[in-house]
Image 1 (cartoon, helix red, strand yellow):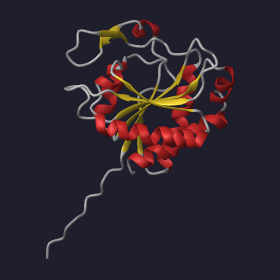
Image 2 (image 1 turned 180 degrees about the vertical axis):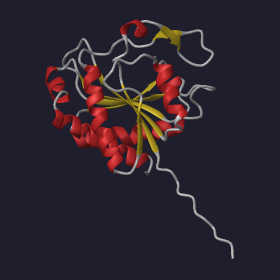
Image 3 (image 1 turned 90 degrees about the vertical axis):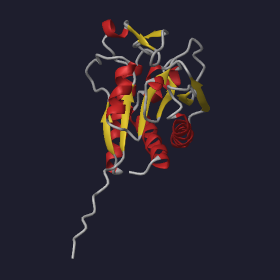
Image 4 (image 1 turned 180 degrees about the horizontal axis):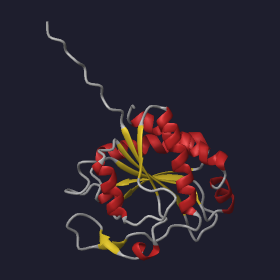
Length: 214
């Protein structure tokens, strides 16, 4: 009698992409905004002051929680300066067939009273994002709701973006969470605190769990 072996299904992989901290000489370079496009963008404008370490701290806490929940996790960068652009970040997640590319940022504005969290998702563009649009929008909805519930931050909702290289080159569902405004003194202090970073991370994980099971 033949023996049938069941193959274990690998856990879903979440690709965390903490924003910025690109080597300045690389960040000033340009790259096509999407496959085949003549429009070019700089690889990294640097972000809001203090954003890069906050994004990394939240990503590291999120990684710990995701692993504890049974997910596999890959991160586009760590503490060392990043030597690529947003095409490279998307390609990193594509190569790993991520169930979700979760981009972690914090916002900035000349209006220092602005505060709150919002989630960006890819605009529908045939040949670029049509294969990931629906799933990315669904991920954006559940992650945004979960982050707001976990942190109590003002809900600034969802923002559709057609100009983000990291979205236009992604072949896996991709969203970008602006976790708060570094330019708002009160929110900046929160974002720099380990306790609040953990609340953000818990929200990111809860939203991820709503989108895809381990």
